[in-house]
Image (cartoon, rainbow over all chains, first blue to last red; front, side, top):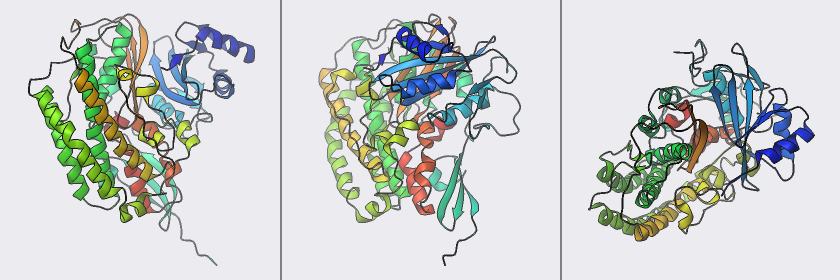
Length: 146
Length: 367
């Protein structure tokens, strides 16, 4: 059984290592600031005992006031998982750092989020539309796109 | 002095017989050698994730059929598992057994299709393919019996399955289960040591272990590299913890291993079905769940081991009758990230074999 790590314990570890990164912790997930996302992700990947080597999925959710990007990490070695979230509070040109440098599985997923939700991932080597054509206007997965 | 040719760009697809749907590879070639490869897709994009947001929870199930259309049952299951997790619905025993039986039959039928089309890509045109389809047909007949559909089953429901199996189903299934192992052994003998098949697939398109994890590969593509990672064992859903089965793995991570892992997995699936047949209890097949459900505010991730890999649904609820957000983790999309690593340096004819060994479905990648 894949165990979900206690978010409270991991969040304590993160705040010791990357101070000021965490903006909220709940039982289900850890919410981090966009600016520290890459540092936190690197910490999760490279810390012994956490070893999150597998980025399972990335979801972006539009809550009108903000966009929330949900990362689901799994460690194959320890068979445990963790949900990490980052938020963008602006609707025009929201940006987050890209995680492609750490997990290449983010490659297509971040492009898809950019295409459909309009969140730009900085540092992505190939940030362009993936399923829609280049001339397409707008980002259809947004809640205000009809 | 070695002469090099001028590199040029060749578009393979979107309507190329070996691309299994509408997929385009922008390949940069130096003579016949692949220098660079860029996958281009989206031709089948229907906006399933957006469509799901305006349907009631139960109305999304038919949409999931249309993702990986050679493995509709497992897609159904992944979605209903996510919703059941969100709404905390308990499924009756008999329904759990039916779900497992259908998922494993689906895995066999999908693997038959992948192996069949893979042999096509590696140059044995249509003879093995038709053998595979002969067996698949029997499984499709079984599915037809339980839900009246041959391709897009729409069989799973939130809280169970749509209807109980008819009386003639179990005898027919026993017959198929008795018949299949011999056929699989026959195909094993026919293909696995075939000189030409080995020459085309062995050592071709190697995916290193670390890369496989890093690109988020799953299913036979991941297991062929030697990693024993199967959601059915590592994070058992439904009632998979009650069955005894092995996880076949490869060693080299080449095209041959991906084929061979699939072949062995079919045997394991038969083992699971045999055990489920012995244990299946009688009783209701659907929990008392209303047509329109309102799961509490929150989010859940449900995942299953589909034939191509980890199929996951991330469902977010705002307390309404429709999912607020329904994200699909498509295994083919992630596996495709590795296409570049496997293909660069190989020749065009190997590229066809390498691409065939993924057994991708475009319906799932484009959604």
